[in-house]
Image 1 (tube, helix red, strand yellow):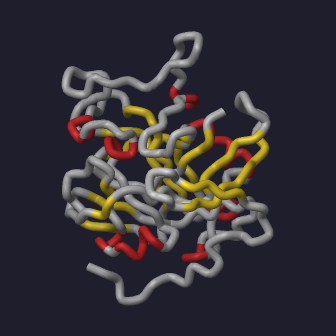
Image 2: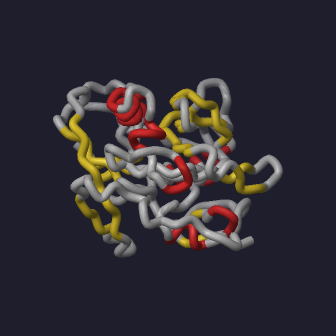
Length: 241
């Protein structure tokens, strides 16, 4: 049900940062972007969305996602429309059929695979998979999150986190929010103001119903979390390079 009081989003971004802007041609939604020097990948600069993806029509938490749908925290559109973005199951974030939440990627029922590089290799940390991101962008992968950890000396929540809801200084302008998530066990939205969670384009080994997720807390970051695919997390997009 809708929340009775909302967060003051005045300081969502760091106005000392020089942001870019991208308009999603699918729905006209405008996103701020931020460029960070890299030096690890095949480009000098990585361009990240400075806010969570907000694409699709809101449906009630627990309803099977697909066909351009999303959850909004507390089933309240305010969160989607005011910087917190949509919450997506793994299959939906990856733009795959919902059956892929219960079976392994590459199985008979979910006969899909992530793109391999020009040498035919598939390196988990470097997977470029568009998912629900707009054309020319992809789901932030493990290596791109590792880049943020390196830049922030593992203090992602502080240096990359928005001042809204008590995360950090947002020096780099990524404006990460402690969004919480949808938890199918118990059927509830939970952990807002505590965690920020993001899907990775990686199937978790030996668990058909699980994928890797990034969990950002005030004092820690994990990029190896086993997360049940029917949970719903926000999505960050990175520009293709």
